[in-house]
Length: 242
Image (cartoon, rainbow, N blue to C red):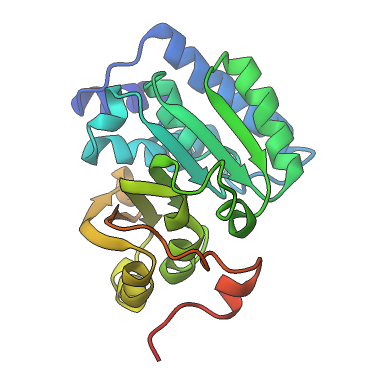
């Protein structure tokens, strides 16, 4: 997907990028690729693939949640890596208030430089484990939206992410092709942690580049205080019904 094709594809969805936003995406691409030469951020570095599989893929969320396009929402991106999906979402909607959590300080430092380069405001970058920060009152049940993009299985993601969502807010998991199977396994964890699956959406990337599944989980009640558990525990001992 060339940049012009990226702009046109978004335009078909009612998203019109101005010159500043187009420049921000171009700068993002260059910062990502240059930094990737000295630090492993992504295996995808070819320009057309970055625009498709990182930028466009992140913005699929906008196709299913119009509030992301205009509203002043608080969004927490867990395990964001090189800033996906939150930074592309922020470029398109500058009103978003973004918090990015990542366990690797090198990635946080990359993101600090990127945010400065792109001139983005209201972006907080937090180095730490989701299991620990989810118990921190500064972040716990404090966000309208929480996103995670293929970080772990749905059961594990639920424990890492749902504690950050305020009651009445939503957790959106971005998964590939095994979403149905993962969601079935995660049903118990979702209910236990105060969530309820609101809907599931599928979207085919252009040029037969794969299927994306989005799982929208509403936060209907507070997460019990014991969750999330200690770092490493959610993945070693997933919350499944025995």
